[in-house]
Amino acid sequence: MVWFEVFIPAKDQSKTNVTLTIEAPNWIGALRSGLSNIGEGQDAMSNVMCDIKPDNSIHVTNPNTKRVFRLREVPAPSDTAPPAAAAPAPVQAAPPQAATEPMVPPIRAAPHVSPTAATVPSGTPRPAPTPTPKRKAPPPSREVQQFSDAPRPATREESPVKKTDPQIGRTDLGEVNIDDVIADVFDATQDLQMEATIDPKRVAEVCLDLAMQKVPAESGTFYTADINNNVLAFTAVRGPKADAILKKGLSVPVGQGIVGFCAQEGVCLVIDQMKHDQRYFSAIADAVGYQPDNTLCATCEADGRLYGAIQLINAKRGGFTAAEMEIVRYIGLTAAGMLSRAADQRAE
Image 1 (cartoon, rainbow, N blue to C red):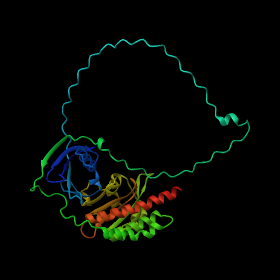
Image 2: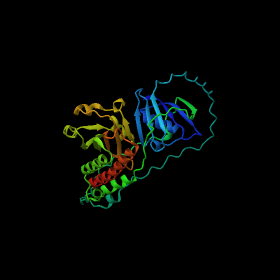
Image 3: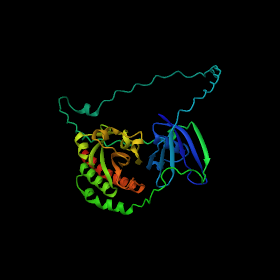
Image 4: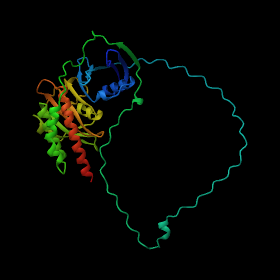
């Protein structure tokens, strides 16, 4: 657990900014706890753009609301003296009990005899029980933090909104208007969705190629979730080191690295300057000799269950935008629907 200072901007000029000091396992846990402490939901955290600053502070921009949350790790607050223990309450004598009637012992129930056992003659063979077909368990539902369980902040400060407040986060988010692109993705996946038997590998390849066509990037990976081993497996890979990655049979543990973090927390992220992010998992990049600069990650989820993730690396146009994040998120949701059907087919 780590202590964070969480700056939550006001929703509008009539409200106040709030700064909390709160303990959490990671920055998104601190932000979610902070939002629940001030009575806001967690919808603001589904798709965000994250910038790691040189001072290790994190600026989290919601492209839809244009709100920018700022977080930084801080030392644990100094412990305060515990409150004095309350004096023990005086022991009172128990009031006299009224006379009660003697207890009547319960009547023992007669042993239950199975009707079948009583009527079937000795030596008569019994019919064999009908075996119950075994179904493969679906991926587990994501655990959602309840607002009532959020830890209370150690400190809370409020400040009025000022026009002179310094600008933080991303100032140029572009227009998040992707209706035409979504329509193209819908049309491009119709044949795949109409196939009688869904092949997860083909889903991964088609959806990754679509993502890289709509969002130009140097490299990309479609991971499928291996729930039994709690890892993300490289199922489709594109880029200069694709063959090396596939030959090594690599995987990413859920919760480790940036894409593992997204899969665990159920968020879509755009991160610039990955090397500044403490979640950056360099083992795979080092293994194949490839150094990423920026990344876009989107999970593939259906009905709260994780089926995979899409990760694009090194945008070809300088950096990933909010609109591109929404496009890849939609592709991930489309893929999740097909992978869910594939899982049902395997269980039949």
